[in-house]
Length: 266
Image (cartoon, rainbow, N blue to C red; front, side, top):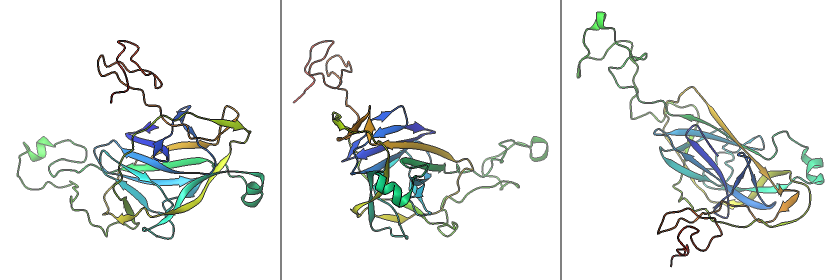
């Protein structure tokens, strides 16, 4: 999923899941998953994550550097930046519904993000206009103008009232092709619960000013596909590109449909 210079994907066993209808993925019940979030902008971004309506970032925000990504793997609870429980998707059975009820945002992953406010260089007015009658021709290296706001690039870590987190560096994974298998069943409703212990670590990052506009992306997790329960994650298919004529072929093709070159290069 892509919007406003941000990309969001769900991963199972290190593989990116294929999207359906632009906003949902099919995932086997009982699977642990992670969220691949990529910042395609030229400035930093703060990201808050909620799953099934529950704040997965514990009142903090993930900081993603420009043109970088993080693989968010676990709940952050009680300020524990050293370890926590992985995200695990389970079926919302009758017994689960009786115990916790049904929530309107069950199965929904929501990320809310704000980009860093661009650095305002001294010598540029907020409205980006120059009063020629009052100030004359602008000069380089002159005195600081009045009514100009600029930001110190060495942002103060104490300026923020909330903790901001930066994820440890994560390596990106190449998406592979896995065929979807199914078994007869009907229920597609699921929820995310605490899974196994995960040692993904986070560190505090310095505060920085944000743009006022907030953006939101929403992804839905389903445990069903075409009336059948998903028993293996439906991942992104890799379409091989011919080394000879550069034609992009079908994912299951063994030879290029254009020139006949083998697509399995050893």
